[in-house]
Image 1 (cartoon, helix red, strand yellow):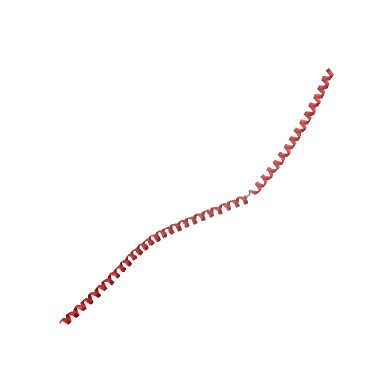
Image 2: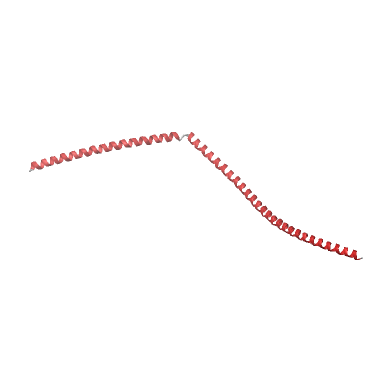
Length: 152
């Protein structure tokens, strides 16, 4: 029995040794892979940092300052244009108000003129009627005068 136990223990030790060896190899590969990835990432970060550092020179800052100044100038011009347009709109609003007032006056004058025309037409009809009456009275007067002249 003792021999069997030793043999089983030896087999167990062999299996455990093999598992430990495999586990060590797997860990070594994982560490090597992680180291490789870390080195690649570090290289990329360094390259990006170099590109940024090379790009952020005095010329870059000057170009950005120039662009900002141009944008400020454009904003100033747009504000001035807005002020001019606001004044123009105000002037046009005043002109429209005056025009509307003038138009109301013209319409009132048209109504008055139409009333005068109606009154004039009525006056002409009355004048024509009175003219006819006057002619009738002259005719009667001439007849009476002729009769008197004959009677004398």
